[in-house]
Every structure is written in structure tokens, then in C-alpha cells.
Image (tube, one colour):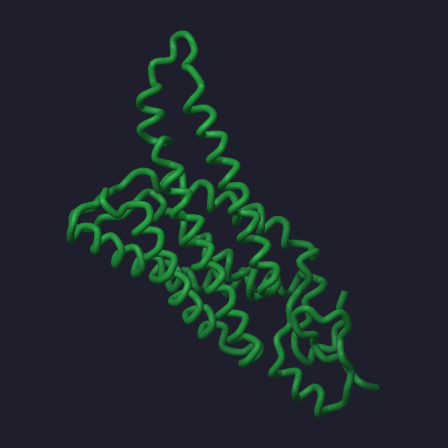
Length: 250
């Protein structure tokens, strides 16, 4: 009896075949359906992390010679979640997540703008403070939209492309490769759009370099956690089929 070969991303039905087909299956990449059990949950957390990070990024912070912004505390997690989505659900699902996050960012910007231009009520004395923080937020959002759109899509594209070439093996290779490409483009675009002319001279160069190194370092440090999360989602996601497992796809 023939065993099922894992379906590549976008295919509707699994292929069947004998030993030769199973051998080829080891070089193919399996992806779960974005209608699967955990995609919506991961997408919700991904979007929340993106919004919180961009609000936090309105404050420039410094630790001695290190200059960064408040988004540094949480934003790298967005890339880790993006890696989970790309690895388990594929490029189309990752693109859907990016577009959803951006749509929510635009909504947040619109709401903050409406609140900002609305006249303060009786007894409210913090209008200037509110404007000083969230009045800068649209520029942060613009920087995030441009940087994260290109950075995260490149991250997902590279990860999926490497996976399709190498199969399920050496997850660390595609995580590091995709992160390096995506984070570099993201960091460069975000820093230039958000803080060019705000952070002066060498501090601005330091801000870009530290931002890139820090984000990549966080992903490297948290890679064992990323591995564990990906393994658990693959194991418990019914529509994900490991190469040569012979499991039914849904």
C-alpha cells in the first residue's frame, strides 16, 4: 500500500507513491492550513505585539552609550512569531498576518489622531503630554509599515524558500538566514523613516547598528524556545504532515 507524500504549500491534495516518492518527500516542505487550530491565536498575539511595540517605540531610551527605543523590549518577539507562522503555515499565511497587523496599526493611528484633535474635556490637563507622545505616533507607524512590510515579508519569503529547498531539516539555518535578511531591511528602513533628524550624528548610526544586532541576538538567544514552539504547533496542528509520516492531511 502506498503512503502519502506531504503536500507542498498551496496544493489541495497529498500525492501518493512508493519508496521513490517517499524519498522525494524528505526534500519537500509540509505546511499546515491557515484555517488550522492555532493560526488565529498566533495571529492575535502577533498583532498585539506589533501594536504594543510601535506605541512603545515613541520613546527613545539610552543605556549608557547604547541608544534604542522602547519597542526593543517586545518587537523581536514579532519576528519570532513571524518565523513560527512562516515555518508552520507558509508564506501566504505569513503575508496574511502582516497585512492584518498593518490594518490594525492603521486603525490605531486613526483612533489616536481622532482623540488628539478632539477638544479636552473639563478637568483634563494632559493634552500637551498626550500630543507630545502620541502626536509622534503616526511617523512611527509609517516607519513600521514600510520597514516591517518589507522586512517581515523578506523574512518569511527567505525562510519558506530555504525550507522548500532543504526540507524539514536544519531549522536553525532558515531561522538565522531569514532573520538576518529581514531584520536588516526592517531596522534600516524603520530607523531612517522614524528617527532621521531626531537622533543626531553618530548616535543615529549607533541606533541602527545596535537595533539590528540586538534583534538578531534576541532571536538567537530565544531559538531554543522558538524550536520548542514550532515543534509543539506542528505536533498538535491537525493539518500539518511531517515528511514520510504517512499521516492523513486535513
